[in-house]
Structure formats: structure tokens, C-alpha cells
Picture 1 (cartoon, helix red, strand yellow):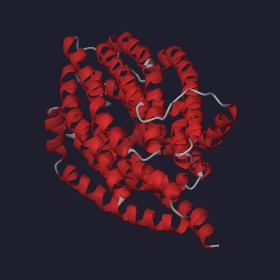
Picture 2 (cartoon, helix red, strand yellow):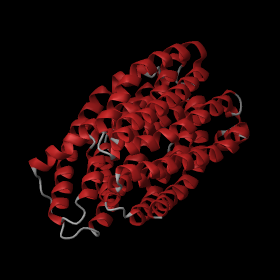
Picture 3 (cartoon, one colour):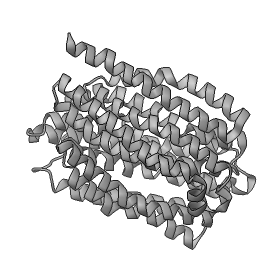
Length: 418
């Protein structure tokens, strides 16, 4: 029952921000225009991808806090060590991001009129990284103790800052720079509020840096990092491929539907988040029963979510982003929705494998998938543009789920039976 309750809290934490974000993105699409909006969705995706630069520490915090939730000294050491480490890592990332931005802009095939604008915007975007990584650590503690009610109430209260501030700044000045400034300010406000609210749940918290704890966290987090780098990279490299091979002026017709699919993925993701700490405590065979039951439930949920969007894709995109998105973008949307179903199932298998301590396996799987996916993405995108990128995404999610399902069966379930 606790899994269902925690999933309910996770969905609560997603629904209200999602209901707010969908119309806001529609307004931004109209304020920024097609090319600027496409580039903004890439910037938004980059901000989300920056979460991988915590070296897997937030995922490790969840697992180790779950194991030591009654040991306050250990929890202090886990959180303190993580905070100091991600603070250092984030500074390194900000500097690298600033230096590499000109090369990234060149790869995106941006029109000359927007070249300087997107360069400044992406350099400013790097300032989100420290706030994002620190927020992840604080929220990882709440996930580790399965306090999903406080976690999601906090998310509902803070999400408006990230969603609405880019809209307000863009309304004042319809440029990418203004939109990104709103995003950066919102992210730092969220980090401050998360720190204050999470600290209230800690018993005499003191920041302790412990080398032994860091070694424990990194030993698990290292492989998590590998999965967190390659997995999300495969999830949004398609936007870069479309921009590079087809031009930034067409990427919005792909990134718009892709953004909606990514938002739908948050719902099965809510189940996976609740499942991860729960499986960490379950006995192995009991854990598989919970896993399979959850897998079939997510299959039904994802089909129910995808079906109305598949049928009314043209009408939904036209209403959301504008009439220019009713044609090719609607076809792309339908293809991506098929991939959404497989991606939803893969998240559950992923949680099952990592909760059993086999983070290395998910890392190896993503390494093996990465290069073949890039080759297929290149071949299909250069030949079929946005439609090819959508097909490549769907093929990749199907293969990803199939491999993870087999890995769980062979490496975890069979071992438990011996």
C-alpha cells in the first residue's frame, strides 16, 4: 500500500506543475517564434541533462539514506559529503559550459541573426547547474526516507518559479536571453527553498565531509553516473541531430512533440521513483513480484495516457503550440508516443536492477546501446529528417526495454532462485 501511496504523492507533485507548464510552453512558443522556441526547448533539455553532473551522488544518497535512515550521524556524513562534492563539481561544470558554448552553438546550425543571442543565453544557462545539483541532494534525502508527501508538496510549491519566471521575463523582452535569465533565477529560488524545507526534517544536521563515505557513494554512484550520462543523452541527442542536419528553423516541429512526450514520461517515472527505495528493502523474490506487478500496471497506465494524444495529436499540438504544428509535428508526435510506452516500461526495469545494487549492469547496457543508436539516428535523420529522428527514438526505447527486462531476469531473478 505504501508503494501506491508514494506513487500517488509523486503524481500529485507532477500534475499541478504539468498543468501549469503546458499552457506556459504554448505561450512561449508564440512569443519566441519557431526558431527561438526550438532553441529554448534545447536549453531546457540541457538544464535537465545537467543533473548527471552530480556523479550519481543523488541516486547514491537515496540508496544509502534508505539503508541508514535510523543512524543520524551517518546521514549527516552522507548529506554533508554529497553537498561539498556537488558544490565543487558544479563549479567545474559552469566553467566548462561557458568555454564550450561557442562550439555547441556552431553545431546547432543556428541562423546568423540568432548566433550571438543563443551564445549568451547558453553561457548564462550554466549558472543553473549549482542550484540544480544542490536541490537534487536535498530532495534525495526525502526520497531515501520515503517522505514523498513533503517532497512533492515542496515540488508543487517551488515549480511555479521555474515555469513562470521564464514567461514573465520573455513577456518583457521576447529573446532567448530573457527566457534563460528567468530560468536561472527560478532555479536558484527553488534551491534556496528546498534547502530550508528539507533541513526542517533533519535531526541536528551538521555538514560533515567524510572520505570513507565519499568512497562508498562514488563506488555506487560511478556506474549510476555512466547510466545517467548516456541514458539522458540518448533521450535528447535527437534534438541536436535534427537541428544540425535539418536546421534550427525546423527543430521546433520535433522538439515540441518531444517535449510533450517527455512530460508524459514523468508519470511512469513517478512510479519508478517510489519503487526504487521500496525494492531496496524487499527480499529478492518478493521484490520481483512487486516489480512484475508494477510493470504490468505501468503498461496499462502508459497506453491509457498515450491513446488520446495519439488520436488527437494534430488538434492537441495546434491548440497548444499553434496551427503551424498541426502537420508534420503531429505525425512525429504519434511516432514518439509509441516509444513513450516502451520507455515507461524501461524505467521500471531500470529501477529494479539498480535497487538490487547492480548499477554496473545498467551502465554496461547503455554503453552497448549508445553507438548503435547514434548510427541509426544519423542514418534516419539525414534521410527522413524529423520523422527519421522519431523512428530512431522509438526503436531505441524498444531495444532498451527488451535488454533491461532480459538483464533483470538473467542476472537478478535467476541468481535469487539458486
